[in-house]
Length: 228
Image (cartoon, rainbow, N blue to C red):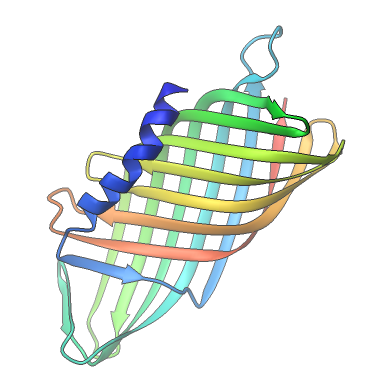
């Protein structure tokens, strides 16, 4: 849990350093967003069912249309253009993580906490094309340090509502920042249907910090969670 305490306060400083790059393409307000989420956890020992290893797969994809104002310059590796222009982008981010932590830790009556820390593998794809005819693509795979947290309120034995957050970063300061409001419905003992609204951001920076892409995707999501 010490890793969780250290990682979250440092996230603001990391983002500040990363965003100091002069050649950052900011993509906000996706025209269409799709999320998927699949989670499974396994107890570490029979004596303590709350201590677990968790595997999670989550993906986010969207399409962006961004106007470039007159006189503004976008400079990313081999993609340099000056406004007025328009960028059309299609992005896909998928994250697979394995982490260790605890679930079901009571913090007060009917409220409980989950906290996990581990590593993640991120696959990032984006295709960008300008109205003036310039185009570029990025394909990147990387490992990051990963942390996720959740605070939940038990509304009924089979229903809970809560807030979730996840964060990852690697040495080039690339990684995800994720917040969400979630409902968890348990129709069976070992399965939960999860859904809600998510704010998801992926920061990609080249290894020399010379340029980067920040993609923000917001929208509803659904998924499944299994507890074995």
